[in-house]
Length: 92
Image 1: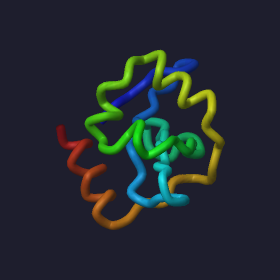
Image 2: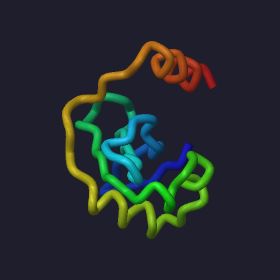
Image 3: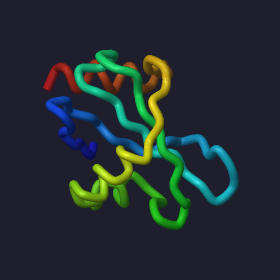
Image 4: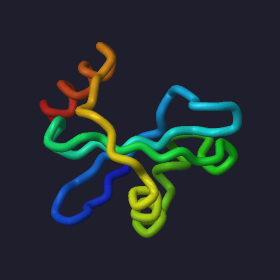
């Protein structure tokens, strides 16, 4: 998963599964450790980022630009399959 360090915090960056509207995708920023800060969201054109692999290929500057355009949301709420991923990451 892509990560970027901003002001001493590490943010995991992932492509959202839901589409806010046709032709767009959401990029989500989650502060690590999980729950430390509200998550952040930015909407991008779908043709710019079609998969998580596209997001992984972005430079640090591109990730910072997305972060600066993002809006702060509430504390993260995870689906049950995402909780499994979090537990798996902690064991590594």
